[in-house]
Image (cartoon, rainbow, N blue to C red; front, top):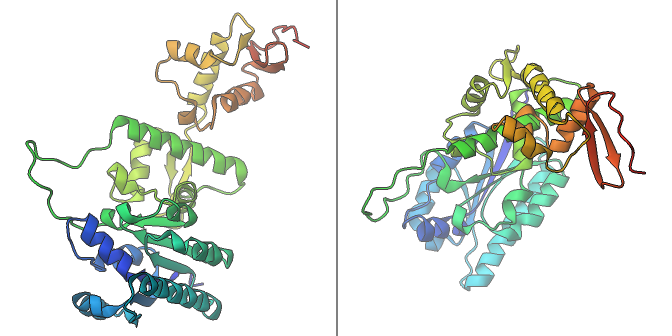
Amino acid sequence: MDLEERIALFLDYENLAIGARDHLGGMRFDLRPVTDALAERGRVVVRRAYADWSYFDEDRRMLTRSHVELIDIPQKMGASRKNAADIKMAVDALVLAFEREYVTTFVLCTGDSDFTPLVHKLRELNKRVIGVGVERTTSALLPPACDEFLFYDRLEGVETPAQPVAPEPETAPAPTPRDLETLAALVAQTVAGLQQSSSGTVTASVLKRTLLRKDPTFNEADFGFRAFGELLRHLAGKSVIELADRAAKGDPEIGLPERGDRETAFELLASTVQPGPAALSGLKNQLRKAAPGFSEKKLGYRSFLQFCKAAAAVGAVDLRWDTAADDYLLSAPGENVVPGS
């Protein structure tokens, strides 16, 4: 069965061209980085761009060479011309969604929040929606509405003009340890959640889709990795996750390390609450005095309470709510705790 994504590409061209010109050092918008990024996601079967092309003569030739259908909106009054192009693009996208069931993904190249209702409607029709926009001109409302959002400035092949010479030349900032630690915690937490909510295996493709649901702007390149697989191998090398080959080449199964690390953490928790009982609030700081690098998120837990509940579930500690203390109390297994109510 052919599972290849069929993509319809719609360009709000004035938004893109002006955004690139005004916020990327006067550069002209280039479609090639967009189509290269989409080639990794499926086959583009529709390409349409909307503008008053009398204002974009050179761009028109570039788009024609890329087999883009140009939809001309030849009105001359600024706001109404822009609105007319937006309305035409939205109507065409919806018509295509109803008439071409084989189109599975819609790519809307715009940063305009006016397209947010269109995104919602397309997703309601079971279409995947990818947004593309210039970062500084993209409304904060648009990326969270999409399944995935690509900032044009960050795409491979987009080279923004050099900035004015500074006393010390700027270099691209390397990912900080904090950035990577946050990323590791996010991945471990997501894998743990997927394992708990699904009886099936967690694969790289499932993990990537879930990360994009949490943050449609997620891109491993922002952390210095060329591909998602490279990111996974890095995290596996740090023992954040484990990778196992599957029949589907390039889509490995992902798990969390064996429970050894968790058992050690449970033992640390048990020793910390002795002599008990100990209140949950403030307990994490006590653990960190004994183990400064402790983080429940690295172990795949969303919160410290979830970590303590997991420890109680395997009998490492006793956990109960105390109404007098208005807090959870932890103690060694079998230790008598006088209830607060």
